[in-house]
Length: 462
Image (cartoon, rainbow, N blue to C red; front, side, top):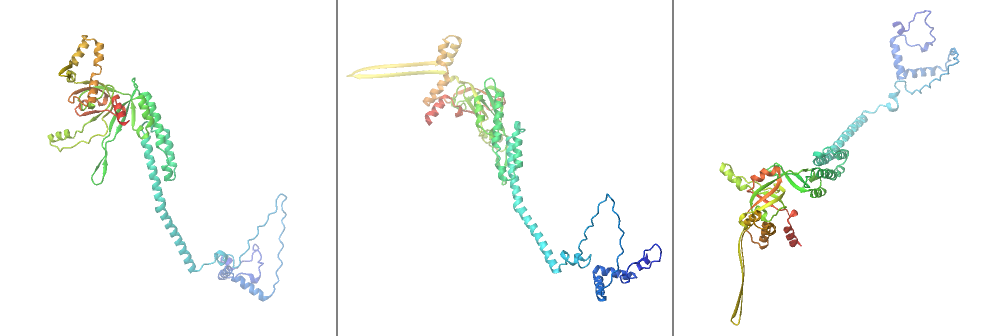
């Protein structure tokens, strides 16, 4: 191997003859070979040879040996030789560094360029951060807040039997697909929810009505919230369930006029009622001016005094109960009303006297009417067959109502009388009505007022 590097080759039959010229032979030693290689890479060796050849004058070039011709095969096609790439001046491997984009940039320019690149990167990062925190993130928070509001509306309206309504899924898809807060807030949730609830409640009225053509509407009311302490936190109290009995026609009208905020919080059921007799004073019985068939609401008087008395007796601090703004029972029907026995004892005398005097001649006329009747005894006599039942019924029909009506017209009545009222209420309210008979008050809604009240209102308001 060392002989090959030095160029010393043994004369053998197998070694090819050396056709190189003496001046083109490489150096015999390894150092010379390395020097020639470095010269070729740097391009100086070629320049020296050109200078030497130019000084010697024209040199005769040897005639190259002819190459043997190879006959191409019949089925083969001649191959085209690829064009050699043009060589750049300044050597083979050092061409990239010597010219074009490979030129070396000065150190000062390199530092300036690197500084500009770093500044541009920092500026881009700073602008991106400012955009994210000042524009993008608040915008996304506003969009998320708007979607949460709409999600809450959908869950509030589409609940219970409409929890799987197809309209709910459609609204959720619209909210998810919205890209701006304005687009989210523009989605109408109340309208589709109202249509769905009206369809559902109308069907419930048809299926839940009883044989008297009535339905019972059950709804819940939340008590007023109390604000406590300095943090102004609200603590909701327990909700109460209310029932109201309505005619089918009235219930259908109510459903057509109400929206989803009301329809979603009520349930229509078949009435399950009980007739409960209660003994109350005239003040508690709506002034004694109610009659059979009237619809009344049942309220409870404030129990603050009673609670304070009980707490003082038990040794605890007195507390007051807040009055309720909603009736305990709505739409109770008056099935019968009985007035106390004292109202049927009649002992009246009416005397009319007229005196006329002409020329010392006087004339006097008197007219006297006396009535002494016990209505209860008349009723007993009629019931026993002692009197004509038809005449007695015609005379005494609605005696208590007529008496109350005369008292109302004359603005004079018996205030200490007691009434026995038979009320039709839902079964769940029976125990409450019995236990609270001393503190309940019957009221008459003006929308369901009796005939005499309607006339008075029309007279007053024209």
